[in-house]
Image (cartoon, one colour):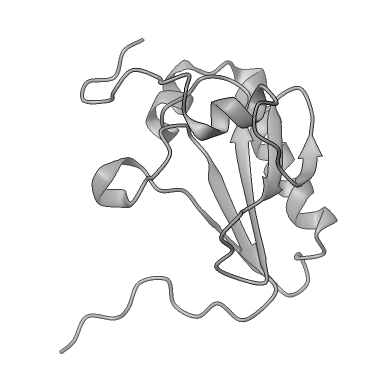
Amino acid sequence: MSITGLPPYDSTNIFARILRGEIPSRKVHEDDYALAFHDINPQAPVHVLVIPKGPYVSHADFSVNATEAEIAGFWRAVGKVARDLGLESSGYRILSNMGADGGQEVPHFHVHIFGGRRLGRMVPRPEA
């Protein structure tokens, strides 16, 4: 199903190239549904990206077009990565940017897992 306003999937994006093994990554986890690896420009002591193995542009695309098995497998991988990194007890943040206004830089759906320190508020409070 096509979602209005989303660009077509670009198979030359960096995450597609990482999935194909053309670009190396520091893998944390890989299974049939997802690949997790350390971000090359970490924004926290722990900063891992989790990407589905299918060609999905965004969360909107993934949520509409992925199979139930892909969706469940991906989100289970996100939870496993957080547990394996020892983030459960101290806490962590999961973030996904979508589209230009949301700050998405790579047109392949992905989530960031941040942890390893107190992260504070994600969005500043508006000034009174």
